Image (cartoon, rainbow, N blue to C red; front, top):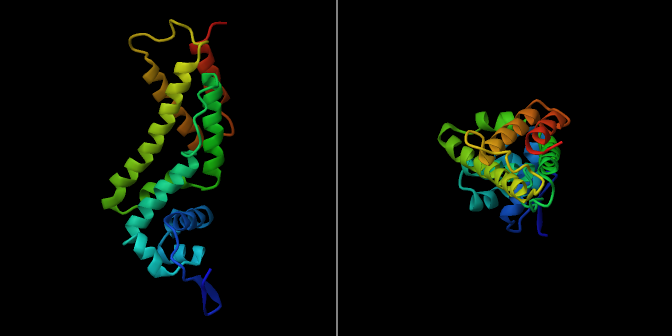
Length: 197
């Protein structure tokens, strides 16, 4: 690594990768919150030359959008395979615990991200967040479909699999925002709804 000393700080002069920059973004968000994220804080966190950041992200808004997507992906474990081999309630527990652990790395991110993004970028930030949400819902749908123990009459007009997944998903998020340690009541409701005995 080529480094230049500037007043006691060492700056990496080698062109860095987009992922290295996003890792620095996640570090800033985890340690200082989303409101502290800017070009200079990311450059300092990653010992990256400011000019290198501008090669990948021409503006702070672009950097913040990419950071939000990266943090959501990290929280929601977008790179991990879905565990559709689990019974549906256990899959829900796995999702809840995975997201709770991920959210613990980024205190207050759930509530802070929307107010930290410039008005023009809010719809883009929401789209990125919704992609993560859709990923979770798809995993739940796959787990529910694969669960052979679900009662045949559990779903009907007015209460579809999609309805259950929406209900479960939003309850998971509510529990996480409330900083609950478990989702046992939600799991019990699922068990009583889907299974016999």
